Length: 229
Image (cartoon, rainbow, N blue to C red; front, side, top):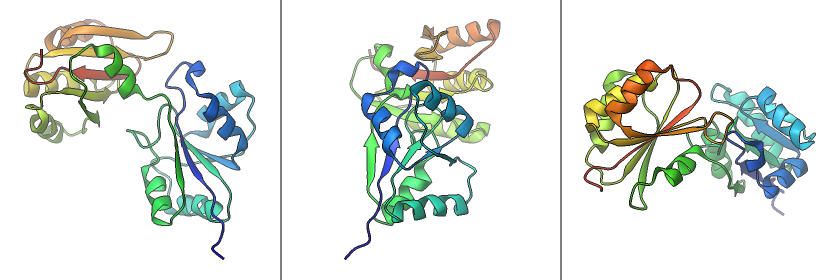
């Protein structure tokens, strides 16, 4: 008889407003044997708000193979694990992909738990026509790689979605203007949080704005596609 294997749940958590978590996610976080979290301190606050007391272990971008193997052994013993990040959906510009891929390779069932993600949230309010978009995540740190990436997608006829930190926002906007031209852009800041802000204009206008106003919080940029009106 085949050995019993646990389930790896990929659980989306709020990107800001804690009310955005799904009822299903709350149930699963209560029922699993362990939660693998990007930052246990951050996740512990969410669990306290939900009155959930499931054991936590850390799994993040710098976790070594030993930590991943330990989680995989837990799954192979027939126990269930919920994978969460600090905000949003694991594997979408967030840690988690290596563990998911390793579980798939070992034949461990991976169960998606849909929920908040900044990319879909920003696209939903952008108001640009068309139903397709290209998600680029965080742009590369090196200017040459950043430029090369944007040039490779400059001719696409659908929106480009980019994550940006406050420390790199001006550089990213400047590279967008240089590689894509002065296009319409939506700059969504601190989505679903108290200081949520959605700014609309051209790339040049957004650059001018944030040269005067210090960037704060996390940003999602939605750039209009080439030739799309």
